[in-house]
Image (cartoon, rainbow, N blue to C red; front, side, top):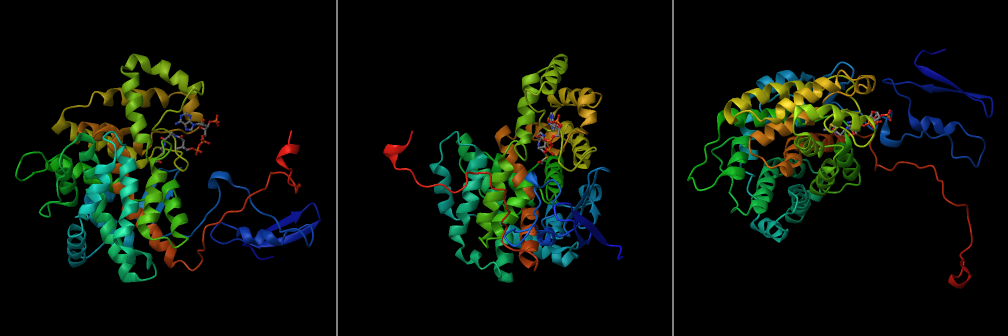
Length: 429
Ligand code: ACO
């Protein structure tokens, strides 16, 4: 008997089947041959939330959740956070290799020269209510970009794809900063091409009356590293949305708006916002045990804890804790860090969290840094979206070039009524 197969006996019929095993998986469609008879469509798998279903092959990021390992294109996240820049990491994710010096120069030049958005975008943003959530404005304006670049729908055209990738990576900080300026009633600050990607974002966020904004080097680097940490994370909820919408061959702006919308949820990228609210609500260390008791009673979840894949410390959370110290040297300590550290200490000694392998995830400490850097809380998911943009685009491109991929269209187990006849309204009970 060949080794790489799975023998399955259908006890309903007594028939045996041999299913090939490849890369530790069986193909779900191979189960279709397992039928009761001619009218039967064959066996399917039931996997709500895709707990155990690989939807693609991917060469972009690798996670070993038990060991707490994350790599982009093979490079450990710790090394990229230490030595790379966000734009270099974006190039790596999209192209598979680190760039040469000339490739990096050209890449950075192209991103830098696509940062300006059409003036009409400002009119969309102006139309939002003053207290509109910036993530809502971000999702909408990313989608709106597709109307400015109708050629983006030529998704099979490599040149067009490359141009939209430049635009999306370049313009997301501009859209994010404009959304913020609208919220706080400040005039929009235009991109400054003399600055780095992250330095320019800080400029567009925080510039007031100075002629030239000069970002603080420590904060600029800290933010750049935070963007690196968020750049990709295999088939998470928002990336699956990007691939799912992209699989219908929608343009990348529309697909990325869907991905950003998925990120907005508090179980995903919106968790960083919730963590800050939690820490503020707890307010002091002595109130932590009572808060943990409420989590254990199932009243609510502890945001920033737990992960579908990591059943060990999230390696990004370790790096973020280190960055927090560097940032606090410039900004002064955010007092919430003491509550967060104590909350983590108490949780990680508690059987509820230990037995469920619930550790701090990337969102647990990121918000404390963002707050120290003066980002408003509702900007936190938007910052996540800027960081995740190259990952979404790399996954979208990989999906389009993958001959195995088709339009995403899961099956269902129908649980509704059997066929019945229409009842006239006067005869309904
Ligand atoms: N607080 C309290 N209990 C939790 C938490 C939490 N944060 N997370 C999971 N649990 C418990 C669940 O209640 C469940 O317990 P049970 O077995 O007694 O029913 C068990 O742990 C398993 O939880 P699931 O919901 O099955 O885990 P899943 O893999 O589906 O969810 C998720 C992962 C969504 C991240 C979850 O841990 C969570 O809601 N965390 C809080 C939100 C958060 O921080 N999200 C950010 C994730 S990282 C990111 O997206 C960037």
